[in-house]
Structure formats: structure tokens, C-alpha cells
Image (cartoon, rainbow, N blue to C red; front, side):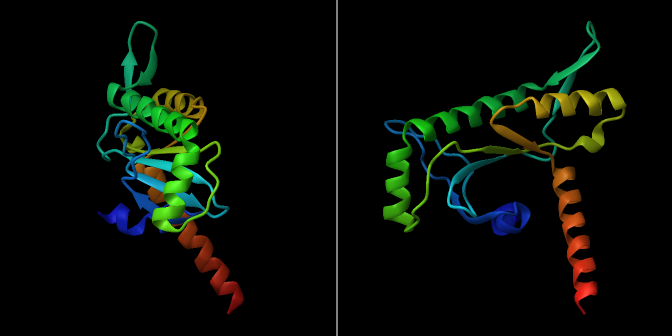
Length: 166
């Protein structure tokens, strides 16, 4: 509920959230949020729980890999993005007719909010998670602790800027 009420503050650069919009034709596909960007494009936000396990350890290779739940979220968002691209004209017309939003539906980005890296105890976990999350082509993975740090940094910048202006 907090994320729903504060999505535009939490995910800066967006001007309007559209909750549970069906992006499928002939079937039902509902991402948690479709977000309208400041330059009138469409992105997708999928929200998982803060306690979502992010990675698991492969002892035979001493590497970490995405946990099953996070892997499911990645393919879920990839499928949403594929549906949006395939049905972009219908989605654009729906947004125009229903929400009075005229935007471009072109190369949408996906964002997954999930998990917490504060549970990582080794540098190897942190490094492998970074390698994994940065290897995603169309999706940005944001953890709850990263989101909190971003917000704190943003508040600090605004406070420092405000102090310079006054």
C-alpha cells in the first residue's frame, strides 16, 4: 500500500502510475504497475516482497545464481514487455481512450522491486548479485535497501540544495 501511494516519489522520473492494466490480448496479464515516464513512454514495475530471496549458492562452482522466485519475476516481466511490444497499438489506444494519456509505447523498460541485499554476508554474494542484476537486458532490478538508500540520498541532495538557495 505504501508503494502504491508513493510510487511517483519512490520511482522518480514517472508522472503517472496505472495499476493492474491488462497488457494481454485474448488473455489476461496484469503487471503491478504500468508507469508513464516524464517523456511519455510506458514502463512496467513488478513488486515482490522485501523478504524475497535474491540468490542461491552453487557450491560446486562457488558462484551465486538467481533464486527461483526472482527468476520467475524476471521471465514474468520479460513476457509483459514482449506483450506490450506486440500489442502496442491496442495498449496505446486503450490508454488514450480510458486514461486520456497519449503516449508512445516503444521499447518499454521493466523494473523489479524485490528483496534486500543487506542479508548478504560476503563480498562474493554482493559481486555475483551485481553481475547478475546488471546482465539483465530490459530489466532493472532494485532491492528495497537500494531504494531506501536512493531516497535518503535524494533527500540529502534536496536539503543541501535548499540550504544553498536560502
